[in-house]
Length: 301
Image (cartoon, rainbow, N blue to C red):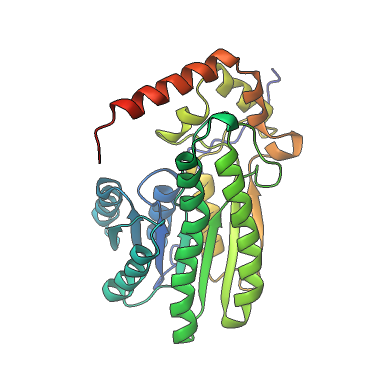
């Protein structure tokens, strides 16, 4: 291991004026945890009114209360972005409560590790519908309103640094994120004439509660991952949030169809998730057996 200086992400210096997003209303899907939560808090700090949505009420409600406790304005609603009718209701609710919508961060996602031969149709479908279909449904519902009202808007999608390369044992996510990247570029061209900008961020590995241990099951792998990244550290939710608020602000009016990679140089030296190939067959067999037991013990819906 080589010693090297690493900037402290816990003590960042904000490059933005405190009124960067004054008067803006920003909708964040999957906004109750992880990257969505960090973006909601940062956008609120910079003056935006936030509308947070996730499937579980306790997730978005916690963020709403957190923002309100600091004097910010926030509302929320439970939504399954895989359901276009729920998405349409969501956008209508944003306009009813907030009176307008200026930006959307399509952050809702799902992911899990599995050998591709072990994937069930339901498992594949759940991730692809959340990531790809959900991003489309929310983008379309927002854009329809902007186009009808002749008002500009900004869409920010979340892909990943393996959108270009794929990733072993993460097939549903890799497939869906690659689709979102194509969607981003396609819509950027099609809707530019309506004043709608569409961009994406491709973050590298960022530890977030819950999801991280699903993807990096071995603590020793985390250390190897950190060393693999040229910047010498893993990403932080605030890294993402800082870039996100810039892209949804009015500071970059001529930037659309762009995907900004934010991974400390990781993808340039090879995708980190390739290390999953080192896991023995026993690991995957045990994981599959556990999944089957959990399904068998799950109470009927």
